[in-house]
Amino acid sequence: MLDATNSLVAATLAFVGGHFLLSARPIRPFLAQRLGVQGFRLSYSALMGAALFWMILSYRSAPFLAVWTPAPAFAWVPLLVMPLAAVLLVAGLTSPGPTMVGGERFLDGAPGSPAVGILSITRHPFLWGTGLWALSHLLANGDFASMVMMGGIAVLSFGGMRHIDQRREAGLGAAWGPMKLTTSVLPFGAVLSRRTVVDWRGIGWWRPLLGLAVYAALLHLHRGFIGVSPLPL
Image (cartoon, rainbow, N blue to C red; front, side, top):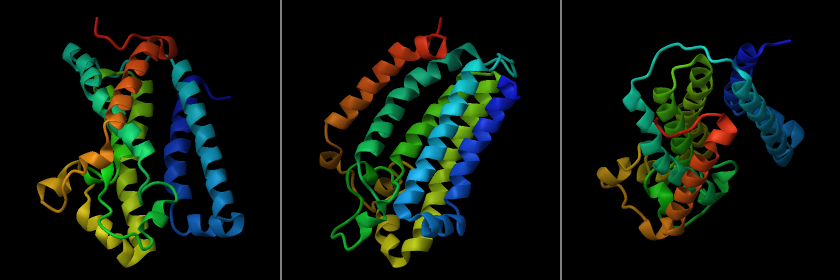
């Protein structure tokens, strides 16, 4: 039986490694052929959901093992970064695009530039949201459990951006060209290089507001769910 710390390490490896392994070539095409595309996606989601649940439970049960002592000022980093992260998370979840699961269909004969809505800022808004969450909390927490879980999510977030781009380019070929040329991984990269303009109308007013509401809810629920206040003392 694994203790809580070892369980967290195992769960994080399963969650992070599982994403890369099951979506890699030739494993993904092989499983999709055997299970069917929909069957594969359902199995993939169920396995990764179970791994995420295991990781969260293990994190909550893991003992506090200090590795380093963050500077007191670092406690403010999540408070400042998380509003942006929450907006990116909401925008990523509510904006269909070619980098989401099954999003290849959005490039099939679609007219015009694919850099619409939040994709005009970055083609990986959801992963930037999770990545910023992980990095900001890594700065504010110096215990082993936080470093394992948040470090794993950071690896999955930023490594996942490259992994998705490589799979899309290999699978879609020339159809990926417009997406690659008019959007960027780095937020505002395509805008600054004048390859696109920000589609504020496509982003809308409600996504930022909903993101800020999610941020407020996370602040409110943090102590009850995690056990510590998110506010610097």
